[in-house]
Length: 209
Image (cartoon, rainbow, N blue to C red):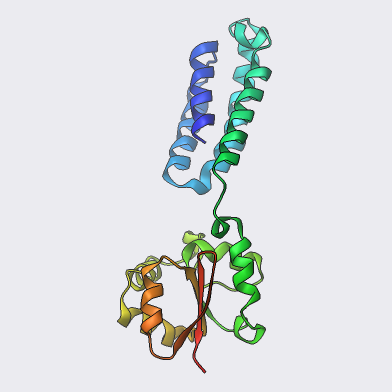
């Protein structure tokens, strides 16, 4: 996203692209939203391109963008894409980020347990949904009340009393968190719970039989 924003600034300042006031405000609003929350970066990429398309075409048509007319845009875009790909390959994602660790963890959880309520790490909510499970919480924060989010943050702090209340009130039968979360160490000492295993940074706890 940083590359896209810097590229757009360079394009605007170096090629004479002019945006009407309303389009400029829309673009600035999208940039603000993307910087405020990463879920909006796709909106910036999609709608931002539409906002810039006509002004960019007009700049090329009136000869105000010599670098574009000289055929430097496509080679420049290719170079940027290659640099981005090289950077991504040089810094591989951890197994916990790719879904491989999550899949390994889920393979060890019996179906009878997976059908029961789960308490999960916020960042694993989407993977639970993709796997057909009903998460306790996920990144669609607009669907949860402020009180619910406060409750979740409190148990993650961690807070033993809040954790016990959530487990009781929601009938939690198993948990899945990143292994480095403080709440994991609390679950290790919680009566009636046992660690099923840790899989490339993802830990699963189940109720002790």
